[in-house]
Image 1 (cartoon, rainbow, N blue to C red):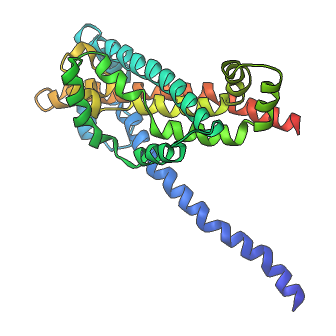
Image 2 (image 1 turned 90 degrees about the vertical axis):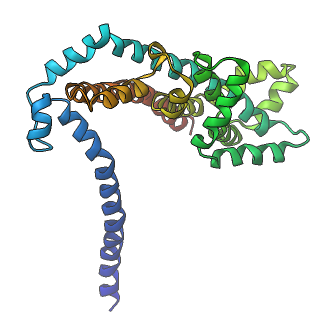
Image 3 (image 1 turned 120 degrees about the vertical axis):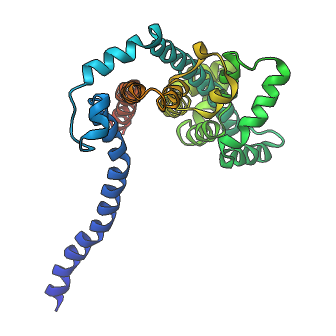
Length: 288
């Protein structure tokens, strides 16, 4: 009886892993099938797009790429440059602001700290689309609607980024290390720059990546704020192509291959930033 129970233990443990594995596989398929469709559809010509099997590769990839970069005398490259501007500048400044705010709330005692944190936490729960109209009205009052600032400024404050920075600062920056620096006579600015900031780099990388992806994929805010096509990011630019595609079907292929190309910078960014997480894990293992 005891032997039977001992044999049933590993078997039950293996069965317990099956359901989570199936759920993860279904979730992976749900996320990857649309990406696979875009990649396959980008290879099809306009005629093949509507006449061949959905996941059958086409023969028009090179023609689609040539048409994409030639459209509007290189308009796609202008949209890509605008997306890079919004994403790089917005995510870099947002990461800095989030790090400063999160570090301050994690390591300093001040009146109203808890209330402020819960107010920021409440901001995480507010959908971004509900803020788009109030942000438009504020930008209209300042005369910034239609400018690059109308897209950049709303992206600088990220409640979720501040929350992550606070959590990471609390767990990765020891209070004893900060106190030792104060005893040595270091100023608070020097402590943050020389002690706190280096310890928070992996968390900052995570915040930067999340902000970059969010800003790069943002559609509603620039769609509301901008009317000049030369300031459009890729998301709004591709939407205009799809809208015009109802009268010019050839633009569907350009829009699809443009969507496929627009994913490449995100993949490259993820692969580049992975080394920072690996270095952090490696340094932790060496210290241990």
